[in-house]
Amino acid sequence: EVQLVESGGGLVKPGGSLRLSCAASGFTFSNAWMSWVRQAPGKGLEWVGRIKSKTDGGTTDYAAPVKGRFTISRDDSKNTLYLQMNSLKTEDTAVYYCTTFQINSSGWYEDYWGQGTLVTVSS
Amino acid sequence: QSVLTQPPSVSGAPGQRVTISCTGSSSNIGAGYDVHWYQQLPGTAPKLLIYGNSNRPSGVPDRFSGSKSGTSASLAITGLQAEDEADYYCQSYDSSLSALFGTGTKVTVL
Image (cartoon, rainbow over all chains, first blue to last red; front, side, top):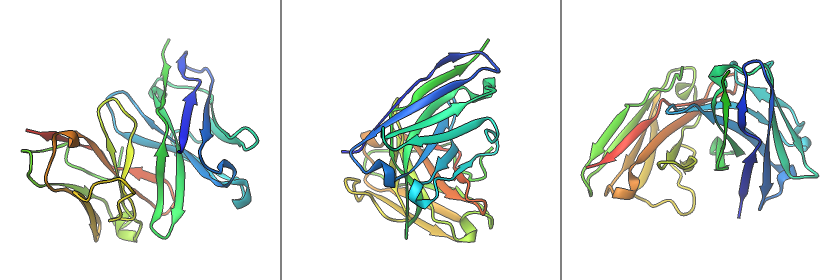
């Protein structure tokens, strides 16, 4: 069974930093492309970014609102995905979801989701 | 601001059929990118409901179906049940391969 467990959320002041983790199990993490998706309180879903598997280059892509401030990385030896968030703004307040990312003939999509971790940016 | 537009809400009585539209443009859905749908039950994480325009993952009831035409896509729920009350989001991509989510639709079972 695929399990994704996010951690590291909390309250941080504007301009501060936070690192989220996502512990993965139930699949071959090293082969997986992974994503982060966020949801502000009472709002819709917003894609944050993704990271390819190392065998596919390990490169990252980011949404425009977080590019240059957020960094996605992975530690395949620990089956863990990370989201380093710097220069946080109040508008970054959201629940952050870790997801597996599927690429096949049916398109690109997030198939499994974690339960999410809440990040609150406030003074 | 999402570029995939959905109706804010739809409602129906148990047993009825409801549809949710997802309207994009020639830069995303109309460019040939597939559309996927997610269901978010109250207080829970989203769950993949439809992938590749019309495919259901294992375990998703066949009451849920998806279609795509031109710059739009639709999700249909037939035989509406109380447990279908949730938020539904469509998803596609643009040429920069940035994921785009729809504005979301709340389904209410009357």
